[in-house]
Length: 160
Image (cartoon, rainbow, N blue to C red):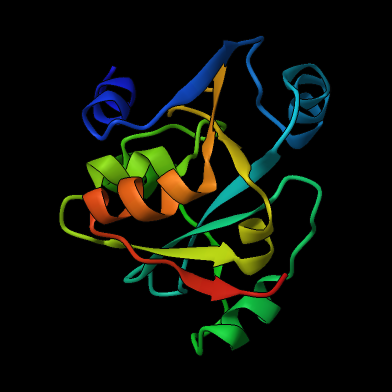
Protein backbone atom coordinates (compact mmCIF):
# COMPACT_ATOMS: atom_id res chain seq x y z
CA UNK A 1 0.00 0.00 0.00
CA UNK A 2 1.22 3.47 -0.92
CA UNK A 3 0.83 4.87 2.61
CA UNK A 4 3.17 2.30 4.20
CA UNK A 5 5.66 2.58 1.34
CA UNK A 6 5.74 6.36 1.74
CA UNK A 7 6.18 6.21 5.53
CA UNK A 8 9.07 3.79 5.08
CA UNK A 9 10.62 5.99 2.37
CA UNK A 10 10.39 9.01 4.69
CA UNK A 11 11.88 7.03 7.59
CA UNK A 12 8.79 7.61 9.73
CA UNK A 13 8.31 5.09 12.52
CA UNK A 14 4.70 4.09 13.00
CA UNK A 15 2.51 1.55 14.73
CA UNK A 16 -0.20 -0.14 12.68
CA UNK A 17 -3.17 -1.92 14.22
CA UNK A 18 -5.91 -3.68 12.29
CA UNK A 19 -9.49 -3.54 13.55
CA UNK A 20 -13.11 -3.93 12.51
CA UNK A 21 -14.30 -1.39 9.93
CA UNK A 22 -15.02 2.04 11.37
CA UNK A 23 -17.81 3.85 9.53
CA UNK A 24 -18.82 6.34 12.20
CA UNK A 25 -17.34 8.21 15.13
CA UNK A 26 -19.18 5.77 17.42
CA UNK A 27 -17.35 2.88 15.74
CA UNK A 28 -14.11 4.79 16.17
CA UNK A 29 -14.74 5.42 19.87
CA UNK A 30 -15.02 1.67 20.49
CA UNK A 31 -11.82 1.04 18.56
CA UNK A 32 -9.93 3.90 20.23
CA UNK A 33 -10.41 2.29 23.64
CA UNK A 34 -8.37 -0.69 22.38
CA UNK A 35 -5.62 1.16 20.50
CA UNK A 36 -3.78 2.95 23.26
CA UNK A 37 -2.12 6.32 23.81
CA UNK A 38 -1.92 9.39 21.68
CA UNK A 39 -4.68 11.42 20.11
CA UNK A 40 -7.08 10.03 17.55
CA UNK A 41 -8.21 12.30 14.74
CA UNK A 42 -11.52 12.93 13.11
CA UNK A 43 -10.82 13.88 9.50
CA UNK A 44 -13.47 15.78 7.59
CA UNK A 45 -13.54 16.50 3.86
CA UNK A 46 -15.17 19.88 3.27
CA UNK A 47 -15.80 22.25 0.39
CA UNK A 48 -17.18 25.68 -0.35
CA UNK A 49 -20.68 26.11 -1.81
CA UNK A 50 -19.40 26.32 -5.37
CA UNK A 51 -17.28 23.16 -4.92
CA UNK A 52 -14.24 25.02 -6.18
CA UNK A 53 -12.22 24.81 -2.96
CA UNK A 54 -11.68 21.66 -0.94
CA UNK A 55 -10.46 21.28 2.62
CA UNK A 56 -9.35 18.48 4.89
CA UNK A 57 -10.03 19.35 8.54
CA UNK A 58 -8.17 17.42 11.26
CA UNK A 59 -9.61 17.62 14.77
CA UNK A 60 -9.62 15.50 17.89
CA UNK A 61 -12.09 12.63 17.52
CA UNK A 62 -14.15 13.85 20.48
CA UNK A 63 -14.55 17.47 19.39
CA UNK A 64 -17.62 18.88 17.73
CA UNK A 65 -17.32 21.71 15.27
CA UNK A 66 -19.52 24.16 13.45
CA UNK A 67 -18.78 24.84 9.82
CA UNK A 68 -19.63 28.51 10.33
CA UNK A 69 -16.88 28.87 12.98
CA UNK A 70 -14.27 27.28 10.74
CA UNK A 71 -15.46 29.30 7.74
CA UNK A 72 -14.97 32.56 9.63
CA UNK A 73 -11.48 31.58 10.77
CA UNK A 74 -10.32 30.89 7.22
CA UNK A 75 -12.29 33.77 5.70
CA UNK A 76 -14.35 31.61 3.37
CA UNK A 77 -18.03 31.32 2.62
CA UNK A 78 -19.85 28.68 4.60
CA UNK A 79 -18.29 25.24 4.24
CA UNK A 80 -20.16 21.98 3.85
CA UNK A 81 -19.20 18.34 3.49
CA UNK A 82 -17.58 17.44 0.19
CA UNK A 83 -19.04 14.83 -2.11
CA UNK A 84 -17.86 11.23 -2.37
CA UNK A 85 -16.98 11.95 -6.00
CA UNK A 86 -14.60 14.78 -5.06
CA UNK A 87 -13.21 12.82 -2.12
CA UNK A 88 -12.23 10.04 -4.52
CA UNK A 89 -10.99 12.50 -7.14
CA UNK A 90 -8.66 14.45 -4.87
CA UNK A 91 -7.66 12.11 -2.01
CA UNK A 92 -8.48 8.73 -3.55
CA UNK A 93 -10.33 7.55 -0.43
CA UNK A 94 -13.90 6.56 0.35
CA UNK A 95 -16.14 8.00 3.07
CA UNK A 96 -15.22 6.46 6.40
CA UNK A 97 -11.56 6.26 5.37
CA UNK A 98 -10.78 9.98 5.16
CA UNK A 99 -7.25 10.60 6.33
CA UNK A 100 -4.41 13.07 5.88
CA UNK A 101 -2.52 10.09 4.47
CA UNK A 102 -4.67 10.68 1.38
CA UNK A 103 -2.73 13.90 0.77
CA UNK A 104 -0.15 11.63 -0.90
CA UNK A 105 -2.65 11.45 -3.77
CA UNK A 106 -3.22 15.22 -3.98
CA UNK A 107 -0.32 15.96 -6.32
CA UNK A 108 -1.82 19.25 -7.55
CA UNK A 109 -2.58 20.60 -4.07
CA UNK A 110 -6.30 20.85 -4.68
CA UNK A 111 -7.02 20.22 -0.99
CA UNK A 112 -6.21 22.78 1.69
CA UNK A 113 -5.24 21.22 5.00
CA UNK A 114 -6.93 22.68 8.09
CA UNK A 115 -5.73 21.50 11.47
CA UNK A 116 -6.99 22.18 14.97
CA UNK A 117 -3.99 23.69 16.73
CA UNK A 118 -4.81 21.62 19.85
CA UNK A 119 -3.45 18.55 18.02
CA UNK A 120 0.06 19.96 18.38
CA UNK A 121 -0.12 19.38 22.14
CA UNK A 122 0.07 15.60 21.64
CA UNK A 123 3.19 13.57 21.00
CA UNK A 124 1.49 10.76 19.09
CA UNK A 125 -1.31 11.05 16.56
CA UNK A 126 -3.54 8.32 15.06
CA UNK A 127 -5.04 8.21 11.55
CA UNK A 128 -6.56 5.68 9.18
CA UNK A 129 -4.06 4.66 6.48
CA UNK A 130 -6.74 5.46 3.82
CA UNK A 131 -8.75 2.38 4.79
CA UNK A 132 -11.11 2.11 7.75
CA UNK A 133 -9.96 -1.35 8.84
CA UNK A 134 -6.69 -0.15 10.36
CA UNK A 135 -5.18 2.74 12.26
CA UNK A 136 -1.62 3.99 12.35
CA UNK A 137 0.13 6.06 14.99
CA UNK A 138 3.12 8.29 14.42
CA UNK A 139 4.90 11.08 16.20
CA UNK A 140 3.28 14.47 15.54
CA UNK A 141 6.74 15.84 14.81
CA UNK A 142 7.24 13.30 12.00
CA UNK A 143 3.81 14.13 10.61
CA UNK A 144 4.55 17.87 10.63
CA UNK A 145 8.20 17.87 9.55
CA UNK A 146 8.45 14.84 7.25
CA UNK A 147 5.06 13.74 5.97
CA UNK A 148 3.40 17.08 5.25
CA UNK A 149 6.43 18.59 3.46
CA UNK A 150 6.59 15.43 1.32
CA UNK A 151 2.98 15.98 0.25
CA UNK A 152 3.62 19.71 -0.23
CA UNK A 153 0.82 20.64 2.18
CA UNK A 154 1.17 23.09 5.02
CA UNK A 155 -1.66 23.33 7.51
CA UNK A 156 -3.76 26.34 8.25
CA UNK A 157 -4.35 26.20 11.99
CA UNK A 158 -7.83 26.75 13.36
CA UNK A 159 -9.31 26.69 16.85
CA UNK A 160 -12.12 24.20 17.42
